[in-house]
Length: 165
Image 1 (cartoon, rainbow, N blue to C red):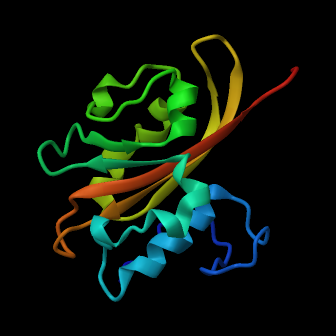
Image 2 (spheres, rainbow, N blue to C red):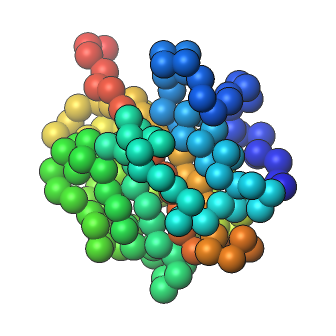
């Protein structure tokens, strides 16, 4: 099993935390992804059970990298992300994501995840298309059908608008 890169949060997270113990989306999804590994470097997409992460699913997405690793396709796109972007992106390539929306900053480093073959999380600030400054956190987690070749990415992102200066 690979180690998590230096830019990943170092907090200890375990699956099955009592409700409210860990609220950060990225850490909870990372813990879930780790629980699916079962000795493999990358868990398969088929291991994802939506009921296990129902509270995270609205902020989640799945990218398919099989046909186009350089421009993955959204196979799932959560309702909260659809609302933030003003549309669903299912069936669309990441190159088609509207600029200045949560999804665009959440997937902009997908190529780095594929290159490094490791989970990555990012956060920061961006300005939405309507001019609203927004803080975000996102995570991208590699998936593999055969345990070796990355065939997809499980991701999630959430945000909050900055009020005032």
